[in-house]
Length: 429
Image (cartoon, rainbow, N blue to C red; front, top):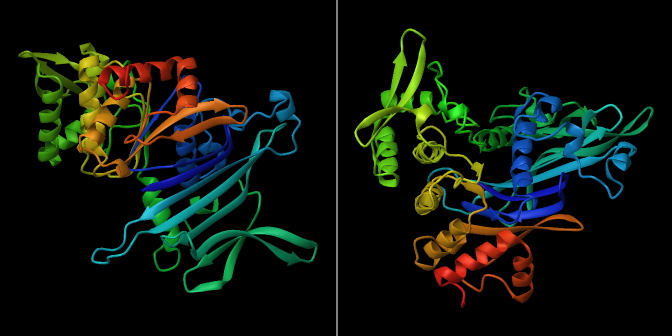
């Protein structure tokens, strides 16, 4: 599980550290940095998994060109273009579940990467990288990758040292300035030699950052394919459900049962293979009438995607997505919130929201004992002269102090949160 993320120099995140939990809800006004934090997670996963930095910075999911990923200085884009080498840095700490039968606190895997860019050419390069195992108290145990200085004929030179298990004093070395991260190089693999590399890939390789598109991607017929999730835009929802029907009928039954609870008019689901076109289509039975997915509401497709994600038997890694309540009828938002809470029991869930009702529902579930406060982070996103800010508040105490209330009244989204809390009885009106 991702325990902590530190971001420096990425878009509006000039310097931000966020402690996480199994369920994380980011809320706040527009342009406060909610989406940028999810993009930072997406970039981190790509830096670990993609072959090159150019592929990691591809525009799918990360808005803008690579230069626009770097925080703007006070002088704006002109100053950025004349900077020698702007950098961004991502540091992540992830807890590793102990082997079965071993009773101890999880170790922490720490990965840090710094990427620089030549503004005039757009050339990206790795300027620093570190991968190490920490104790539960964040004390170093073994460092597998780190930047160090080596004496060479031409003078001291910075290199990235890669240490093998069993031979830590004889590391391989890579030059600083590579066009890819060391951890993305698959020659460094194998539990006998590079166990930390494999642990990092297992953890981050299971992350899914979703940008659901119920308008287009989730409505399109698609050919059958072997998939393990619904896809980053929900484009694989139909083949995913088709696979559940034929390989994991219990999981599909759970999807069907939960969507019917959320929307009682839905009585059944099925996928149908059009043998003439070789494409799968999703059909939903509502009030006894079978409808193709292309005519049902966006909210229905979003809810179905959430149900499918919650029942995923193939992957149990971090899942993050924006505004799950979009297009959902206000009376169904509590269903969305409960789905998020239920999913966070088996995998980490990070969401952004504009809905005060989502925050209200989470607080109510905590105060009613349905969720434990330690399993949830409610994080208010804001802005300052130093960029985006992330403030965790205690759902068991007052929502905000006097200063926060004044700030909340200025930001319309926060005013709505306060209003909803008052209506819900969490604050005195």
